[in-house]
Length: 100
Image (cartoon, rainbow, N blue to C red):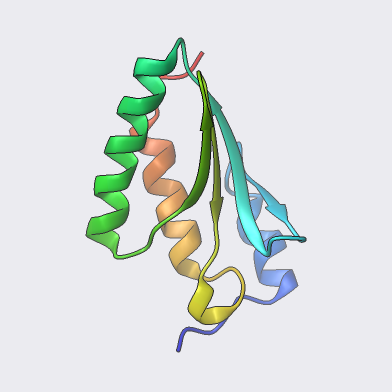
């Protein structure tokens, strides 16, 4: 079992992420990505999906046309863990130069 981060740890760590916030209702990190169009959003989902599979940590997400919303939570921890911050950083690196 993975231990969840404390509220103080989450607050400190989320400050290091430029575009993410903590969603207390879902006990998850949240980010919205906006792309030039649907093909770019779908391509990003595929790329993020492969990275998530490699990390064995999978996002919750929703896609509508050019918008992708991502929630990262560690279900085994019933909250946010370091795994979520690690995947958020990977996603941020993958999305450099791809958003509108």
